Amino acid sequence: MFIFSNETYDFLKWVAQIVLPALGTFVASIFTICHLPYGEQIVGIIAAIDVFLGAILKISSDNYTGDGDLIVDTSDPFKDVYSIAISDYPSVLASKERVTLNVKHPQHMKED
Image 1 (cartoon, rainbow, N blue to C red):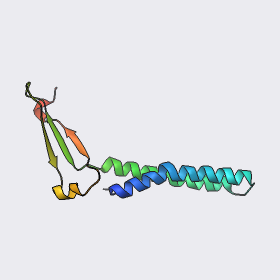
Image 2 (cartoon, helix red, strand yellow):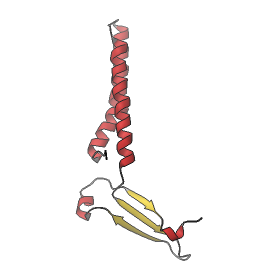
Image 3 (cartoon, one colour):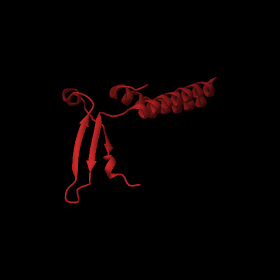
Image 4 (cartoon, rainbow, N blue to C red):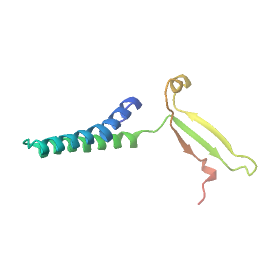
């Protein structure tokens, strides 16, 4: 399974969405304005790195299962019941800046 920590994921996402596209645009502009050689090749390499980074970030995101589940039970017509099932010790979750929960519905609530 391929999953990055939150900090690593956020950093790599910033690199993929901000740094590499800006660098590619900068290189393309400077090399064109100054008539420097190999500008297209360098921009192509930057774009290839960016696409690869985007792919591994997508794989990491797809493999991330979250920190637990928010269980929503609406089977009682008078009140909804919400509970949280966490996958780690509460102290571990408390040390995070962000916690991700997957919304789950009890099996008896699913319609056929």
